[in-house]
Image (cartoon, rainbow, N blue to C red; front, side, top):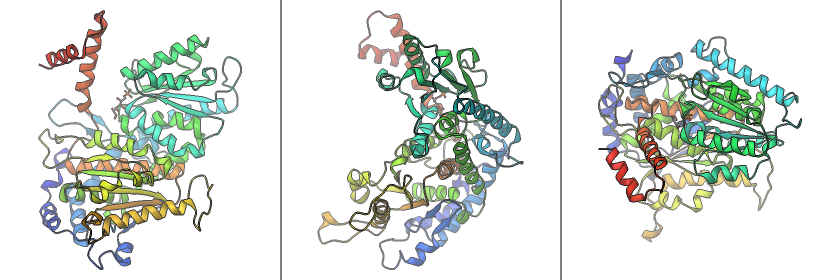
Length: 532
Ligand code: G6Q
């Protein structure tokens, strides 16, 4: 199986696509962006539609992208990943050498999951979580004073923070109003101090999330919160919960009121649907809505197995990204959700995508044959329109754009002002921007000219709910994985973050030996010595 892996550069269609990219369709030309094109370049899934008429693609380009997908076996590799193939590896070199099974966490709605053992493990953890949430709901699990827990403080960083936090922000409209969730991630003492000043610790659960159980920031923050509990006369053992890897240093049930497992076949940045996200989301949303979230993700995983790129949104989204980045040369991607609830989602994608596909070595240990993942960034619209869209419209950097929008608002509280609701204003702005980026505008005044051909696509669904959020998360996870396959890289390790961690640990150990804090210059010298 492993010998079949190759990058798109080795595919026959690569050359054809390179030639097509020399003269891509001009979206500003008259009669290009017709209603027929808008209708034809639309991929309809069960929950989302992907509108891609404002991408510089033609039927020929789509055929070429389909050939790349077929030749590289993108869908086949995705299926193998779901079944438990060891994909987190670099052949011939030491590497994590693991399966990649985040999809198994949500493959619970069938009797025939793609990877039975992993889904069974997910089911065991979900049962434990359901029991725990029932105890909380029915008042069997109370604080020392016999009161219910109202707050959960989620302590974790990186993959143990960004995904869960962005999911919580996205779904807060569906949370139990009597329950609050706070997050502490940064080792900056102001982060923990801010949260601790806002909560009633006596009615707080503290969820410490660390797959490795060794992360410096998380362990420091756990200690700070435990000290605060003790100082308040509370027993940390009756307030602290954990999510960690089996047999990690944090796998110690004596220290925690309840412990949940995540497994080494789930990467941190892909872990939002594992216990890493599920415990906090279950507390906030309740078990039933947690299942809806997982169901949306599971449905999208299934949708990602269809070989026809015009019927598979994650695959098409991935290939359009590759077309923009590797053939048209767009260096970065702006993810622009027209939904305030998704305000942290670009930050999650930044990690998920850039930590996965920011690599320069192929799975065979050789240098990559083409540029790997692009720079990912973004902010919600319409706010961004009043900030950085100037560069997107008229700047010299040519950024590919991914809009995300919903027909209906989450909370349904809206008002007609000057004949339209705010939701209509939001959607109108998104569509207007998409069109303006594509067609541009000629003007006698060069300062008022818009070149157009600023490529963009729109993902649209009816409403942002637990189910559609789960689907959106899985859509992007699959997109990232497909792009990694295109580059023939390992999208599941993160060696690039190790060096800084090692050096910081070394500096800290030297700092703890010295009585006086070393100057910055001394510290830099220490680092360069260590690096020699
Ligand atoms: C994600 C990365 C990284 C990781 C954090 C936290 O894919 O591996 O962001 O999630 O470093 O790690 P722990 O969960 O082990 O504390």
